Length: 315
Figure 1: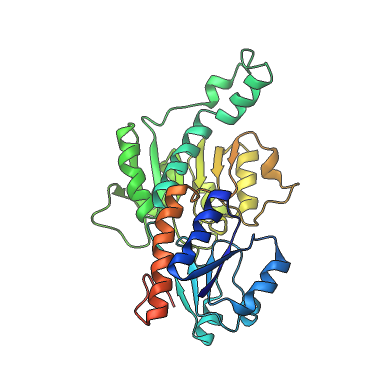
Figure 2: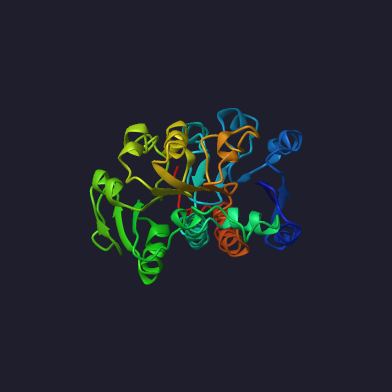
């Protein structure tokens, strides 16, 4: 029986599906990210780690002598110490495309939520003040139609988003570190995209070249009154500069699923802003994403046992 550790919270339904994998020769232990004691107890016998968000550090790798594969449930591997895995001969794989639809849909939802101030209106309506709103509210809402949406990156998520945004009447442009001739949007240099887009949406991996890509200087370039959407990685944005841009009114709002520090501290200033819509790094999390992910994760476990080449190997 192959020992697998799923290092994340799991719903009752997911736990039942993971337990059923014993029929495929997998004994899957579920350890929530916050349960350090259970993690330490399980790691010595684990052969495969199904990793979500909690960092896979050199220290963690050192306490798992039987570990042979770190399987990222998702795409970004910035939370995995790749060098530590390489030194130990531990394979690292990801699964591009499995969560793209879920992330694209939440990205669209955040755009609409910020543009139409949905959380504010929901709260006001529940409090009984929905019909006596601030008189300047019509000046602070808008439609997607007629807006220019600047997509930073042109991977699977923006490729799904661009046709939908176009169908809703938006103009899609994009910047990528290398232009994509088959992209469903028009390429613009980064500076021009920032200066002319009504919505800037981030879809890039967090690597040394992209860390703090939206620095204070670049945030200052963004068109006044634009909104920022980030469902990629918090480290792409200078968060202090983002807060300053919101406080000064240079940005009209933001929709964020990812943050520089996760989970957000309870006193974080983003939490008190009604022009920001927040979700807790769960853009990827749908039953459909998990179905697609488990297919790949289980197949890579089989391949590991059989000595066959692994799918989507990074290290």
